[in-house]
Image 1 (cartoon, rainbow, N blue to C red):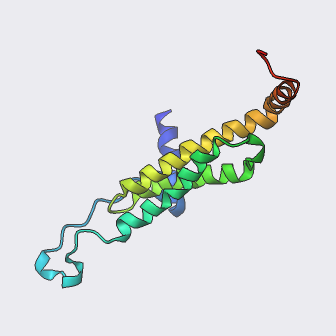
Image 2 (cartoon, rainbow, N blue to C red):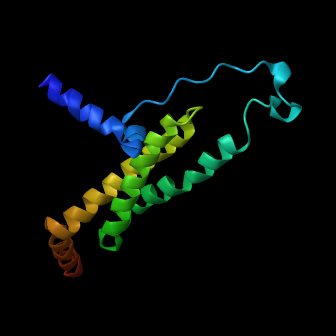
Length: 147
């Protein structure tokens, strides 16, 4: 069994694209002495290291706000693509050097929101949620329960 797993792993690692997805990032290069840096590169971080991922938080915030809306308006294809997108970029945020935990947190939140939306979509369209919603609407139109 171990030989079969080793053979599969060797086959995966021989593919350049799969090697990136299935491997850990290379170790960082040794630091360059400060005396060799040009003056513009002495800053600890660039503004885009914060504002890029920070502005990207609009996507999961919008998805979380959409969990309060009617499930009839959820697009299954868009939810699936955003789930794959978030999972991919969670991996990417940890694979790049330096690692970007803010981007990881953003995509982790978006992944959770999209999985929630996906559950609501499947429940509404395939597991009777639509019928339950219509029955509830008819009950409320007749005067509601508890009156």
